[in-house]
Length: 287
Image (cartoon, rainbow, N blue to C red; front, side, top):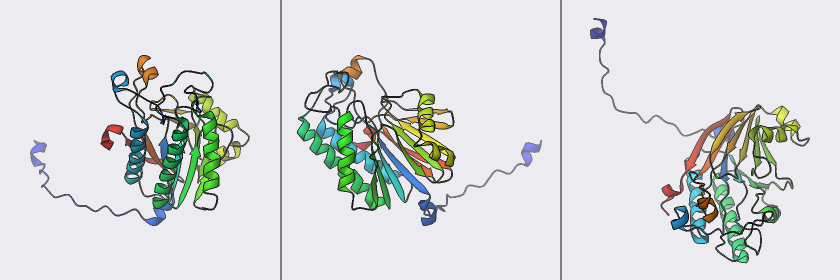
């Protein structure tokens, strides 16, 4: 039969013919390092939520997660530090949510929390400056840190005002955008608008964003709030919902919320949009 005429392929060794990414190609790429719903200052007990979480552990995880995202992402000339909201677990001296007044499991004093938060963000910015020519920082408003997100934006804008390689988004509304060639990126924590299609309409209809929407070919909107990963292609944009690195507190565990923890870095091309992603899990950090 004809199968008998097929000659088996000879075994051969693998050749490492991969070449480093050219500098010209890296100019077209931008890495987006996302940190969503980190809840710095929250206290969690493994007997309730499956893992412990406090200020000391959170500090180590945040830095190691960024190192992992940076090292595993493609070489890119620019990056966005997408701090997507709820970086701080509480927004003041009282351990409650700002609007609803829900009692929170707080690990530390607010003064200490503010100091650690600023130090960690500075370290993250400096890490990114070592690997990228341009760094753009977003400190999005979350439902846990409505006030704190405001002073964080303005403090870092002032801090890096003489560093031309760093830009900080100081937009007062909780909707943020960044234009990378013909790729448009939108950012919103998710506490104001959760529905993907509605969220797309907010960005496409806002008078400030409409010119950008018309110029760009590929649109991606990053959101968080629900602590779980989800992607939805709708109404001309891909809406990406990000997970959290934080452990579950008493409220989450008692209500049966059990999402997969992690953080994701995306790489975008000026013309082609998303080209790669890196997923980091807390367990892989060996902390």
